[in-house]
Every structure is written in structure tokens, then in C-alpha cells.
Image (cartoon, rainbow, N blue to C red):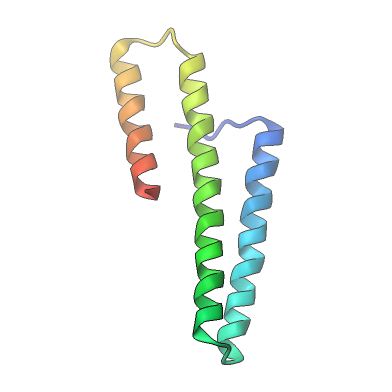
Length: 92
């Protein structure tokens, strides 16, 4: 399955990932500075949620493309469904 996303969908996902990248850099700095464990864990949880949302956005786009391609043979649709379900569960 290729990652085919509209420009606005891709921009949103990339923004989420860039924000998470900045948060991760901040977490590394917090650890290096010996910051409070609770603060570090709070930031880790925020990054985790941001990454999950980016992943779910990509999967949702894949589902949307699959539904738009309704003319596929049943075997192809079943295979695509199984692949998307596996991806979804990997984030759950």
C-alpha cells in the first residue's frame, strides 16, 4: 500500500510529526538536566499521543482511499482490509 495523501492531509501529518520531534528533543534535554521524573513522563505521554494521532491520520487516509476504490475485486479488498487492520492494531 503506497502512502497517497492529499497535500493538506500530508501537511497536517508532517506538522504533527515535526511537533513530536521537537518534543522529543525537549525530553532529551529534560533528562540531561535532571528534571523531575513526573515532568519527563508527562512529556513522553504527550509525544506518544502525537505520534498515535499522526499514525491514525495516515491509516484513516488509507481507509478513505480503499473505500473510494470500491471497484476492486473482493480478494483485493479483503487483503487491503487485513493490512489496514494490522496497521491499526499496531497503534492500539
